[in-house]
Image 1 (cartoon, helix red, strand yellow):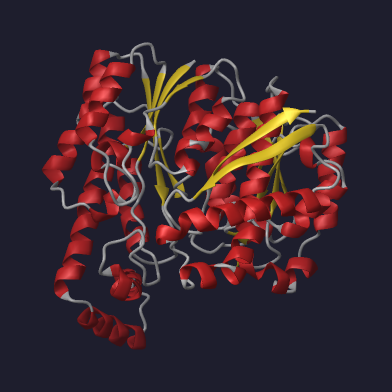
Image 2 (cartoon, rainbow, N blue to C red):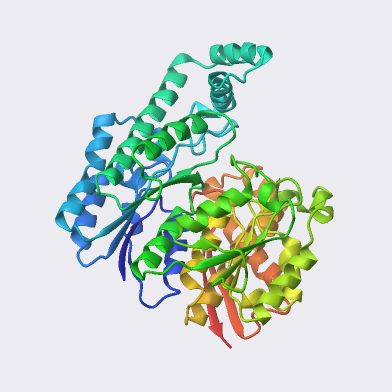
Length: 507
Protein backbone atom coordinates (compact mmCIF):
# COMPACT_ATOMS: atom_id res chain seq x y z
CA UNK A 1 0.00 0.00 0.00
CA UNK A 2 1.46 3.36 -1.05
CA UNK A 3 0.32 6.29 1.10
CA UNK A 4 1.16 9.99 0.76
CA UNK A 5 1.20 11.70 4.14
CA UNK A 6 1.01 15.51 4.57
CA UNK A 7 1.49 16.17 8.31
CA UNK A 8 0.02 18.80 10.60
CA UNK A 9 3.48 20.32 11.17
CA UNK A 10 7.17 19.42 11.20
CA UNK A 11 7.53 18.22 14.82
CA UNK A 12 8.43 14.55 15.43
CA UNK A 13 4.96 13.80 16.84
CA UNK A 14 3.46 14.67 13.46
CA UNK A 15 6.34 13.91 11.09
CA UNK A 16 8.09 10.93 12.70
CA UNK A 17 5.54 9.00 14.79
CA UNK A 18 3.25 7.96 11.88
CA UNK A 19 6.33 6.83 9.93
CA UNK A 20 7.39 4.66 12.88
CA UNK A 21 3.97 3.02 12.92
CA UNK A 22 4.05 2.51 9.14
CA UNK A 23 7.38 0.66 9.46
CA UNK A 24 5.66 -2.01 11.52
CA UNK A 25 4.29 -3.40 8.24
CA UNK A 26 6.47 -4.21 5.26
CA UNK A 27 3.57 -3.63 2.85
CA UNK A 28 3.29 0.11 3.62
CA UNK A 29 5.24 2.65 1.56
CA UNK A 30 4.86 6.09 3.15
CA UNK A 31 5.59 9.10 0.92
CA UNK A 32 6.30 12.22 3.02
CA UNK A 33 7.46 15.72 1.96
CA UNK A 34 11.01 16.76 2.91
CA UNK A 35 11.10 18.69 6.18
CA UNK A 36 12.22 21.91 4.49
CA UNK A 37 8.83 22.13 2.75
CA UNK A 38 6.88 22.14 6.02
CA UNK A 39 7.81 25.46 7.62
CA UNK A 40 8.86 25.79 11.25
CA UNK A 41 6.51 26.61 14.10
CA UNK A 42 5.28 30.17 13.35
CA UNK A 43 6.96 30.25 9.94
CA UNK A 44 4.35 28.96 7.51
CA UNK A 45 5.08 26.47 4.78
CA UNK A 46 4.82 27.72 1.20
CA UNK A 47 1.50 26.10 0.27
CA UNK A 48 2.10 26.60 -3.46
CA UNK A 49 5.44 24.77 -3.30
CA UNK A 50 3.83 22.03 -1.23
CA UNK A 51 1.03 21.71 -3.79
CA UNK A 52 3.60 21.29 -6.57
CA UNK A 53 5.37 18.59 -4.58
CA UNK A 54 2.08 16.75 -3.99
CA UNK A 55 1.21 16.78 -7.70
CA UNK A 56 4.68 15.53 -8.66
CA UNK A 57 4.70 12.64 -6.17
CA UNK A 58 1.11 11.42 -5.98
CA UNK A 59 1.29 8.90 -8.85
CA UNK A 60 0.63 5.34 -7.72
CA UNK A 61 -0.63 6.27 -4.25
CA UNK A 62 -3.60 4.32 -2.93
CA UNK A 63 -4.35 6.92 -0.27
CA UNK A 64 -3.61 10.51 0.70
CA UNK A 65 -3.55 11.46 4.38
CA UNK A 66 -3.86 15.23 4.42
CA UNK A 67 -3.68 17.87 7.14
CA UNK A 68 -5.87 20.74 6.00
CA UNK A 69 -3.95 23.05 8.38
CA UNK A 70 -0.77 22.37 6.41
CA UNK A 71 -2.52 22.31 3.03
CA UNK A 72 -4.47 25.56 3.49
CA UNK A 73 -2.58 27.69 6.06
CA UNK A 74 0.95 26.27 6.00
CA UNK A 75 0.90 24.45 9.35
CA UNK A 76 -0.73 24.14 12.75
CA UNK A 77 0.56 27.33 14.40
CA UNK A 78 0.13 29.38 11.18
CA UNK A 79 -3.55 28.33 11.23
CA UNK A 80 -3.81 30.31 14.50
CA UNK A 81 -1.91 33.33 13.20
CA UNK A 82 -2.85 33.85 9.55
CA UNK A 83 -4.56 36.88 8.00
CA UNK A 84 -5.90 35.03 4.98
CA UNK A 85 -9.38 35.78 3.67
CA UNK A 86 -12.00 33.07 3.37
CA UNK A 87 -11.57 33.29 -0.41
CA UNK A 88 -7.82 32.62 -0.21
CA UNK A 89 -8.34 29.68 2.12
CA UNK A 90 -11.08 28.21 -0.05
CA UNK A 91 -8.87 28.49 -3.14
CA UNK A 92 -6.23 26.33 -1.43
CA UNK A 93 -8.85 23.88 -0.16
CA UNK A 94 -10.39 23.52 -3.62
CA UNK A 95 -7.18 21.83 -4.79
CA UNK A 96 -8.50 18.68 -3.13
CA UNK A 97 -11.11 18.50 -5.87
CA UNK A 98 -8.34 18.51 -8.49
CA UNK A 99 -6.68 15.50 -6.83
CA UNK A 100 -9.87 13.47 -6.91
CA UNK A 101 -10.74 14.56 -10.44
CA UNK A 102 -7.28 13.47 -11.64
CA UNK A 103 -7.46 10.11 -9.82
CA UNK A 104 -10.99 9.12 -8.70
CA UNK A 105 -9.66 5.91 -7.11
CA UNK A 106 -7.38 7.54 -4.57
CA UNK A 107 -8.80 7.56 -1.04
CA UNK A 108 -8.43 10.91 0.72
CA UNK A 109 -8.29 10.88 4.54
CA UNK A 110 -8.22 14.48 5.77
CA UNK A 111 -8.06 16.22 9.14
CA UNK A 112 -8.99 19.75 10.16
CA UNK A 113 -8.85 20.78 13.81
CA UNK A 114 -11.28 22.99 15.66
CA UNK A 115 -8.94 25.79 16.71
CA UNK A 116 -7.91 25.76 20.35
CA UNK A 117 -8.33 28.53 22.96
CA UNK A 118 -5.66 28.17 25.68
CA UNK A 119 -6.75 29.28 29.15
CA UNK A 120 -3.43 30.96 29.99
CA UNK A 121 -1.29 33.90 28.91
CA UNK A 122 1.33 32.77 26.40
CA UNK A 123 2.21 33.78 22.85
CA UNK A 124 4.45 30.74 22.29
CA UNK A 125 1.96 29.23 19.81
CA UNK A 126 -0.64 32.02 19.60
CA UNK A 127 -0.74 35.67 18.40
CA UNK A 128 1.56 38.07 20.26
CA UNK A 129 -1.30 39.67 22.17
CA UNK A 130 -2.08 36.29 23.76
CA UNK A 131 0.96 36.92 26.00
CA UNK A 132 -1.06 39.49 27.96
CA UNK A 133 -4.69 38.74 27.08
CA UNK A 134 -4.86 34.97 26.60
CA UNK A 135 -6.60 34.24 29.88
CA UNK A 136 -9.10 37.04 29.28
CA UNK A 137 -9.87 35.83 25.74
CA UNK A 138 -10.47 32.31 27.07
CA UNK A 139 -12.72 33.67 29.84
CA UNK A 140 -14.65 35.80 27.33
CA UNK A 141 -15.35 32.73 25.19
CA UNK A 142 -16.16 30.55 28.20
CA UNK A 143 -18.71 32.99 29.64
CA UNK A 144 -20.14 33.88 26.22
CA UNK A 145 -20.91 30.20 25.68
CA UNK A 146 -22.48 29.88 29.14
CA UNK A 147 -24.65 32.91 28.40
CA UNK A 148 -25.67 31.48 25.04
CA UNK A 149 -26.81 28.29 26.77
CA UNK A 150 -28.70 30.19 29.46
CA UNK A 151 -26.41 28.94 32.23
CA UNK A 152 -24.61 32.16 33.18
CA UNK A 153 -25.03 33.51 36.72
CA UNK A 154 -25.52 37.23 37.54
CA UNK A 155 -21.95 37.46 38.88
CA UNK A 156 -20.61 35.80 35.73
CA UNK A 157 -22.63 38.23 33.62
CA UNK A 158 -20.77 41.09 35.32
CA UNK A 159 -17.46 39.31 34.84
CA UNK A 160 -18.22 38.87 31.14
CA UNK A 161 -18.80 42.59 30.68
CA UNK A 162 -15.66 43.40 32.64
CA UNK A 163 -13.42 41.02 30.71
CA UNK A 164 -14.80 42.22 27.38
CA UNK A 165 -13.85 45.77 28.29
CA UNK A 166 -10.37 44.68 29.35
CA UNK A 167 -9.43 43.21 25.94
CA UNK A 168 -8.50 45.81 23.29
CA UNK A 169 -11.11 45.69 20.54
CA UNK A 170 -8.60 45.08 17.75
CA UNK A 171 -7.23 41.96 19.50
CA UNK A 172 -10.63 40.42 20.18
CA UNK A 173 -11.77 41.29 16.66
CA UNK A 174 -8.66 39.66 15.18
CA UNK A 175 -9.10 36.51 17.26
CA UNK A 176 -12.82 36.07 16.67
CA UNK A 177 -12.43 36.91 12.97
CA UNK A 178 -9.79 34.22 12.48
CA UNK A 179 -11.96 31.66 14.23
CA UNK A 180 -14.80 32.53 11.86
CA UNK A 181 -12.55 31.95 8.83
CA UNK A 182 -11.28 28.66 10.24
CA UNK A 183 -14.79 27.49 11.05
CA UNK A 184 -15.83 28.30 7.50
CA UNK A 185 -13.01 26.03 6.28
CA UNK A 186 -14.23 23.31 8.65
CA UNK A 187 -17.64 23.65 7.04
CA UNK A 188 -16.22 23.65 3.52
CA UNK A 189 -14.22 20.49 4.30
CA UNK A 190 -17.41 18.76 5.45
CA UNK A 191 -19.01 19.78 2.16
CA UNK A 192 -16.11 18.12 0.31
CA UNK A 193 -17.03 14.91 2.14
CA UNK A 194 -20.67 15.35 1.17
CA UNK A 195 -19.69 15.85 -2.47
CA UNK A 196 -17.40 12.81 -2.57
CA UNK A 197 -13.99 14.54 -2.74
CA UNK A 198 -12.88 13.55 0.78
CA UNK A 199 -13.53 9.93 1.78
CA UNK A 200 -13.06 10.41 5.54
CA UNK A 201 -12.65 13.57 7.61
CA UNK A 202 -11.39 13.77 11.17
CA UNK A 203 -12.14 17.00 13.07
CA UNK A 204 -10.19 16.84 16.35
CA UNK A 205 -10.86 19.42 19.04
CA UNK A 206 -7.50 20.88 20.04
CA UNK A 207 -7.23 21.52 23.83
CA UNK A 208 -10.92 21.93 24.63
CA UNK A 209 -13.12 22.51 27.68
CA UNK A 210 -16.77 22.20 28.68
CA UNK A 211 -17.61 25.79 27.67
CA UNK A 212 -15.95 28.26 25.32
CA UNK A 213 -15.11 28.99 21.70
CA UNK A 214 -14.33 25.35 20.91
CA UNK A 215 -17.68 23.97 22.14
CA UNK A 216 -19.47 26.72 20.19
CA UNK A 217 -17.62 25.71 17.01
CA UNK A 218 -18.19 22.04 17.84
CA UNK A 219 -21.94 22.65 17.89
CA UNK A 220 -21.84 24.16 14.38
CA UNK A 221 -19.69 21.32 13.06
CA UNK A 222 -21.88 18.61 14.58
CA UNK A 223 -24.99 20.26 13.15
CA UNK A 224 -23.53 20.13 9.65
CA UNK A 225 -22.45 16.50 10.05
CA UNK A 226 -25.93 15.55 11.22
CA UNK A 227 -27.85 17.62 8.66
CA UNK A 228 -25.93 16.05 5.76
CA UNK A 229 -26.05 12.57 7.37
CA UNK A 230 -22.29 12.17 7.35
CA UNK A 231 -21.85 10.61 10.80
CA UNK A 232 -19.88 7.65 9.47
CA UNK A 233 -17.63 9.78 7.23
CA UNK A 234 -16.87 12.74 9.53
CA UNK A 235 -15.75 12.21 13.13
CA UNK A 236 -15.37 14.96 15.73
CA UNK A 237 -13.59 14.24 19.04
CA UNK A 238 -10.82 15.64 21.33
CA UNK A 239 -7.28 15.41 19.99
CA UNK A 240 -4.77 16.98 17.62
CA UNK A 241 -1.18 15.80 17.22
CA UNK A 242 -2.10 12.10 17.09
CA UNK A 243 -4.38 12.51 14.08
CA UNK A 244 -1.77 11.49 11.49
CA UNK A 245 -1.34 8.17 13.32
CA UNK A 246 -5.12 7.71 13.53
CA UNK A 247 -5.69 8.29 9.82
CA UNK A 248 -2.78 6.04 8.89
CA UNK A 249 -4.42 3.24 10.88
CA UNK A 250 -7.80 3.84 9.31
CA UNK A 251 -6.40 3.98 5.77
CA UNK A 252 -4.43 0.75 6.27
CA UNK A 253 -7.30 -1.18 7.84
CA UNK A 254 -9.82 -0.05 5.22
CA UNK A 255 -7.43 -0.91 2.39
CA UNK A 256 -7.14 -4.46 3.74
CA UNK A 257 -10.84 -4.77 4.55
CA UNK A 258 -10.30 -5.48 8.21
CA UNK A 259 -11.74 -4.08 11.44
CA UNK A 260 -9.62 -5.18 14.42
CA UNK A 261 -11.50 -5.83 17.68
CA UNK A 262 -10.28 -3.98 20.78
CA UNK A 263 -10.96 -4.93 24.39
CA UNK A 264 -10.41 -2.03 26.85
CA UNK A 265 -9.07 -2.57 30.38
CA UNK A 266 -8.85 0.31 32.89
CA UNK A 267 -6.60 0.63 35.95
CA UNK A 268 -9.44 2.28 37.91
CA UNK A 269 -13.17 1.66 38.13
CA UNK A 270 -13.59 5.43 37.79
CA UNK A 271 -11.30 5.56 34.77
CA UNK A 272 -13.89 5.61 31.96
CA UNK A 273 -15.86 8.37 33.71
CA UNK A 274 -13.06 10.85 34.46
CA UNK A 275 -13.08 14.06 32.40
CA UNK A 276 -9.37 14.87 32.01
CA UNK A 277 -7.68 18.25 31.80
CA UNK A 278 -7.81 19.96 28.38
CA UNK A 279 -10.75 17.83 27.21
CA UNK A 280 -14.52 17.99 27.30
CA UNK A 281 -15.72 14.41 27.86
CA UNK A 282 -15.07 11.26 29.91
CA UNK A 283 -12.07 9.13 28.99
CA UNK A 284 -14.34 6.21 28.09
CA UNK A 285 -16.08 8.27 25.41
CA UNK A 286 -12.74 9.34 23.94
CA UNK A 287 -11.64 5.69 23.81
CA UNK A 288 -14.71 4.89 21.72
CA UNK A 289 -14.07 7.83 19.40
CA UNK A 290 -10.40 7.05 18.79
CA UNK A 291 -10.91 3.32 18.25
CA UNK A 292 -13.55 3.76 15.56
CA UNK A 293 -11.71 6.69 13.94
CA UNK A 294 -8.65 4.44 13.62
CA UNK A 295 -10.68 1.71 11.94
CA UNK A 296 -11.26 -0.60 14.91
CA UNK A 297 -14.23 -1.69 17.00
CA UNK A 298 -14.59 -2.15 20.74
CA UNK A 299 -15.57 -5.60 21.93
CA UNK A 300 -16.91 -6.88 25.26
CA UNK A 301 -14.51 -9.75 25.85
CA UNK A 302 -10.79 -10.39 25.69
CA UNK A 303 -11.33 -13.75 24.02
CA UNK A 304 -12.80 -12.28 20.84
CA UNK A 305 -10.37 -9.34 20.63
CA UNK A 306 -7.40 -8.85 18.34
CA UNK A 307 -5.91 -6.31 20.72
CA UNK A 308 -6.07 -5.57 24.45
CA UNK A 309 -6.03 -1.82 25.12
CA UNK A 310 -4.75 -1.28 28.67
CA UNK A 311 -5.65 2.25 29.81
CA UNK A 312 -3.78 3.53 32.85
CA UNK A 313 -6.05 6.27 34.20
CA UNK A 314 -5.95 8.45 37.32
CA UNK A 315 -7.96 7.35 40.33
CA UNK A 316 -10.24 10.38 40.32
CA UNK A 317 -8.64 13.39 38.64
CA UNK A 318 -5.85 14.21 36.20
CA UNK A 319 -2.62 15.79 37.38
CA UNK A 320 0.50 16.80 35.47
CA UNK A 321 3.49 14.49 35.21
CA UNK A 322 5.56 16.89 37.31
CA UNK A 323 3.28 16.19 40.29
CA UNK A 324 3.93 12.44 40.49
CA UNK A 325 5.98 12.51 43.69
CA UNK A 326 3.25 14.42 45.52
CA UNK A 327 0.29 12.98 43.60
CA UNK A 328 -3.20 13.00 45.06
CA UNK A 329 -3.97 10.04 47.34
CA UNK A 330 -6.67 8.86 44.94
CA UNK A 331 -3.93 7.69 42.57
CA UNK A 332 -3.35 4.80 44.99
CA UNK A 333 -6.72 4.51 46.76
CA UNK A 334 -8.96 4.65 43.66
CA UNK A 335 -6.94 2.53 41.23
CA UNK A 336 -4.76 -0.58 41.42
CA UNK A 337 -1.57 -0.61 39.39
CA UNK A 338 -0.71 -4.03 40.80
CA UNK A 339 -3.87 -5.60 39.41
CA UNK A 340 -3.47 -3.66 36.17
CA UNK A 341 0.04 -4.99 35.55
CA UNK A 342 -0.86 -8.51 36.70
CA UNK A 343 -3.75 -8.54 34.26
CA UNK A 344 -1.46 -7.32 31.48
CA UNK A 345 0.95 -10.15 32.31
CA UNK A 346 -1.94 -12.64 32.27
CA UNK A 347 -3.08 -11.54 28.81
CA UNK A 348 0.48 -11.57 27.46
CA UNK A 349 1.03 -15.08 28.85
CA UNK A 350 -2.13 -16.11 26.98
CA UNK A 351 -0.60 -14.81 23.75
CA UNK A 352 -2.78 -11.71 23.50
CA UNK A 353 -1.36 -8.55 21.92
CA UNK A 354 -1.39 -5.68 24.41
CA UNK A 355 -0.82 -1.93 24.10
CA UNK A 356 -0.79 0.58 26.95
CA UNK A 357 -2.28 4.06 26.82
CA UNK A 358 -0.69 5.69 29.86
CA UNK A 359 -3.01 8.63 30.59
CA UNK A 360 -2.75 8.81 34.39
CA UNK A 361 -0.82 12.07 34.08
CA UNK A 362 -0.78 14.61 31.28
CA UNK A 363 2.53 15.48 29.61
CA UNK A 364 4.38 12.36 30.66
CA UNK A 365 4.22 8.67 31.53
CA UNK A 366 3.53 7.13 34.93
CA UNK A 367 6.93 6.46 36.54
CA UNK A 368 5.61 3.83 38.95
CA UNK A 369 3.81 1.96 36.16
CA UNK A 370 6.98 1.72 34.05
CA UNK A 371 8.97 0.35 37.00
CA UNK A 372 6.26 -2.25 37.59
CA UNK A 373 6.14 -3.26 33.92
CA UNK A 374 9.91 -3.75 34.03
CA UNK A 375 9.77 -5.70 37.29
CA UNK A 376 6.99 -7.92 35.89
CA UNK A 377 9.14 -8.71 32.85
CA UNK A 378 6.53 -7.57 30.31
CA UNK A 379 7.74 -4.14 29.27
CA UNK A 380 9.37 -5.48 26.10
CA UNK A 381 6.49 -7.83 25.31
CA UNK A 382 3.99 -5.04 24.60
CA UNK A 383 2.85 -4.17 21.08
CA UNK A 384 2.68 -0.46 21.82
CA UNK A 385 3.00 2.21 24.51
CA UNK A 386 2.30 5.94 24.68
CA UNK A 387 2.20 8.42 27.55
CA UNK A 388 2.73 11.92 26.14
CA UNK A 389 0.93 15.28 26.14
CA UNK A 390 -2.88 15.14 26.46
CA UNK A 391 -5.01 12.08 27.15
CA UNK A 392 -6.21 11.90 23.54
CA UNK A 393 -2.74 12.48 22.08
CA UNK A 394 -1.64 9.40 24.01
CA UNK A 395 -4.84 7.46 23.31
CA UNK A 396 -4.75 7.98 19.56
CA UNK A 397 -1.06 7.09 19.28
CA UNK A 398 -1.36 3.90 21.32
CA UNK A 399 -4.51 2.76 19.51
CA UNK A 400 -3.11 3.43 16.04
CA UNK A 401 0.12 1.57 16.90
CA UNK A 402 -1.88 -1.43 18.04
CA UNK A 403 -4.41 -1.45 15.21
CA UNK A 404 -1.68 -1.36 12.56
CA UNK A 405 0.90 -3.50 14.30
CA UNK A 406 -0.93 -6.14 16.37
CA UNK A 407 -0.05 -8.74 13.72
CA UNK A 408 3.35 -7.35 12.73
CA UNK A 409 6.09 -9.79 11.80
CA UNK A 410 8.78 -7.14 12.24
CA UNK A 411 9.75 -7.72 15.85
CA UNK A 412 12.74 -5.40 15.59
CA UNK A 413 10.53 -2.44 14.63
CA UNK A 414 8.10 -3.34 17.44
CA UNK A 415 10.99 -3.21 19.93
CA UNK A 416 12.36 0.00 18.37
CA UNK A 417 8.99 1.74 18.70
CA UNK A 418 8.62 0.62 22.33
CA UNK A 419 12.10 1.81 23.29
CA UNK A 420 11.59 5.15 21.52
CA UNK A 421 8.29 5.82 23.26
CA UNK A 422 9.48 4.79 26.73
CA UNK A 423 12.56 7.01 26.39
CA UNK A 424 10.56 10.00 25.12
CA UNK A 425 7.27 9.71 27.01
CA UNK A 426 8.48 8.32 30.33
CA UNK A 427 12.20 8.95 30.69
CA UNK A 428 12.28 12.45 29.17
CA UNK A 429 8.80 13.87 29.75
CA UNK A 430 8.39 12.69 33.36
CA UNK A 431 11.96 12.53 34.71
CA UNK A 432 14.77 14.18 32.75
CA UNK A 433 12.82 17.24 31.61
CA UNK A 434 12.14 18.37 35.17
CA UNK A 435 15.61 17.32 36.35
CA UNK A 436 17.16 19.68 33.77
CA UNK A 437 14.64 22.47 34.44
CA UNK A 438 15.25 22.28 38.20
CA UNK A 439 19.04 21.89 38.11
CA UNK A 440 20.51 23.37 34.92
CA UNK A 441 18.11 25.78 33.24
CA UNK A 442 18.62 28.60 35.76
CA UNK A 443 22.41 28.71 35.47
CA UNK A 444 22.59 28.09 31.71
CA UNK A 445 19.48 29.85 30.41
CA UNK A 446 18.35 32.23 33.14
CA UNK A 447 15.42 30.00 34.10
CA UNK A 448 13.65 30.18 30.74
CA UNK A 449 12.42 26.90 29.23
CA UNK A 450 12.67 28.54 25.80
CA UNK A 451 16.23 27.57 24.98
CA UNK A 452 17.21 30.41 22.64
CA UNK A 453 20.89 30.22 21.69
CA UNK A 454 21.62 27.75 24.51
CA UNK A 455 20.04 24.72 22.86
CA UNK A 456 23.47 23.31 21.97
CA UNK A 457 24.51 23.51 25.64
CA UNK A 458 21.36 21.93 27.06
CA UNK A 459 20.68 19.04 24.66
CA UNK A 460 23.94 17.21 25.54
CA UNK A 461 22.91 17.39 29.21
CA UNK A 462 19.51 15.93 28.31
CA UNK A 463 21.20 13.11 26.40
CA UNK A 464 23.55 12.28 29.28
CA UNK A 465 20.68 12.18 31.79
CA UNK A 466 18.50 10.06 29.49
CA UNK A 467 21.32 7.54 29.11
CA UNK A 468 21.87 7.40 32.86
CA UNK A 469 18.21 7.13 33.90
CA UNK A 470 17.47 4.49 31.28
CA UNK A 471 20.46 2.33 32.15
CA UNK A 472 19.95 2.66 35.91
CA UNK A 473 16.21 2.05 36.00
CA UNK A 474 15.36 -0.44 33.22
CA UNK A 475 16.80 -3.57 34.80
CA UNK A 476 14.85 -6.52 33.39
CA UNK A 477 13.69 -5.51 29.91
CA UNK A 478 15.31 -5.21 26.46
CA UNK A 479 18.34 -7.21 27.66
CA UNK A 480 18.89 -8.71 24.21
CA UNK A 481 19.41 -5.29 22.62
CA UNK A 482 22.07 -2.61 22.53
CA UNK A 483 20.23 0.69 22.86
CA UNK A 484 22.04 3.89 21.94
CA UNK A 485 20.62 7.42 22.08
CA UNK A 486 22.47 9.00 19.16
CA UNK A 487 21.15 12.56 19.01
CA UNK A 488 18.83 14.90 20.91
CA UNK A 489 17.42 18.17 19.63
CA UNK A 490 14.64 20.61 20.53
CA UNK A 491 12.25 20.87 17.54
CA UNK A 492 10.70 24.13 18.70
CA UNK A 493 13.67 25.35 20.76
CA UNK A 494 11.99 24.63 24.08
CA UNK A 495 11.98 22.04 26.88
CA UNK A 496 8.40 20.89 26.29
CA UNK A 497 9.35 18.21 23.76
CA UNK A 498 12.46 16.67 22.21
CA UNK A 499 13.37 15.09 18.93
CA UNK A 500 15.81 12.22 18.94
CA UNK A 501 17.46 9.50 16.93
CA UNK A 502 18.21 6.15 18.55
CA UNK A 503 19.58 2.81 17.46
CA UNK A 504 18.29 -0.53 18.76
CA UNK A 505 20.38 -3.50 17.65
CA UNK A 506 20.34 -7.15 18.77
CA UNK A 507 23.31 -8.08 20.93
